[in-house]
Image (cartoon, rainbow, N blue to C red; front, side, top):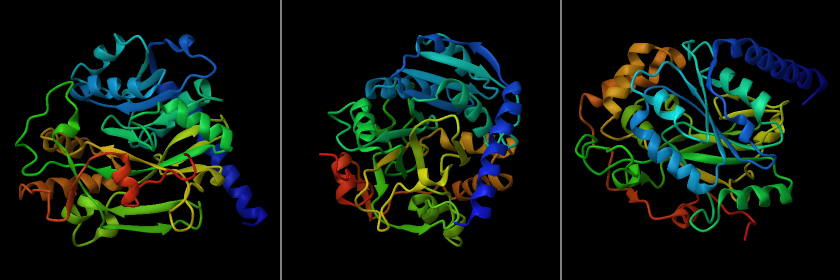
Length: 336
């Protein structure tokens, strides 16, 4: 990349920081326990709206992995999410009535918090229905991974979104508060993915899986991106560009070898497709706060009319991270 291109990217990054500085005023601090953050704390950041039923398991899962503190931005929940989070001793909470779409789908709020509280910390940015799995996650805490990344001089860790789904209709098994969602959504597509490199930012762009197969069968190029870089040793000079799909500086996006093989990576098990999905999709469609005038949620609404069963004869039942490594969906790299 030439000097002019590099300068433009630097200006773009600064503009994202400026946006975050402006948008921080939309947030009101509800409870601030950030004084408990230590120098080596692992911090999780999350934007949510009306996710009360998911929160008990979400918090338990990431506490068990080794997250030390949670920074939540509640975007106008009406189901008790904010009240529940206020009672959690390792949670700091902000509230905002602002536009999710006009805040870069929540990333301006997240960036403001990262710049203030996360400099020098390993940070994990996920949605309430995303659950990180990584090599040896059943036996090694998240800190073992971040220690190895530190030792290896690696600043960012990628994870492919793996859409999980039940066998049979989505509404056949009601999801209970506090339940492991993968007791219901046990299946995933073991193949059916396309990968291409984004020449401008250097990241890979991954699409496919059941969302492309069922909801975007005529135009799979419009299916949601499945590549994310959720775990980063944060520096206040960094910024996410598009959700957590890519970062600046662009070197943070070089998380894969050219053929996707040897660099360590994980997966985000995506528990979207539960019996709560239809109501959530309808709510988000009415709000109109998502990318491309909520085109993704229009596709969900139209696809759900046929009461689809996402399971097919090529679906595979989830066992553990080693299964995903064998299938080439994640890699332990040289972490032994």
